[in-house]
Length: 306
Image (cartoon, helix red, strand yellow):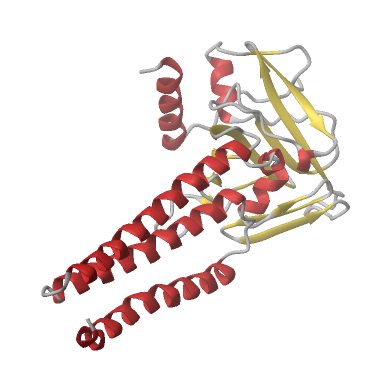
């Protein structure tokens, strides 16, 4: 056994020190790469990846030693076997335990799949959120994000209901929303507005948030006094999921804006407007592009179980 130590120690040092340096470097990248809010689910997911990476490298190290040093005594073989089994058990227990803990402690009681449509209007001009970068198909986190489709996606575990608030969503995508200001990340840069700022036409602007909600087969509009703290409706399809309109401009009691999916469902007669919901001048013509049509067809298939 003592004769084998000069061969075993360098190999063990290589495989045990590498994952530590990898994880440390990865942590530094995470701190500087993003300014978005992180949740308990994000933290557990990140830690799970680290545990699996470290366990995998340790296991690989012991397997390599076993292959390179075939003429080993039974005692050494048992030690190497334990070096393979123990990291496997630790990683498995951590993954299962963190999943159970997250589901049992979350206010959503486990994973959810909610959607709400969103339109942002800045002094009469519709804003598009920043497009996903690189290989990613979303802006935000794994649980709270947008796919360049004017839709808020909540797909995962909601540990606290405040995470599903409208203001929380903008924090997840790198912006912010309060009751009197917003910071919207777009492809043209960050659009910042505060109550009292002047629009290009010289009028004084006010931040306003309106929400359309569906009850049975009819929908109504509500102007929110505290839009940033509004909690999204727990619905998978839109409608009945929310249609949220954020407007910075002249103050009004109702908005004439309406999300595309509400317009389409209204035109097909699947939903109807509650009396007095919309101003008379509202244009019901939906702005339908190829992406919206595909999204609508996919949603219809999910609703009818096709």
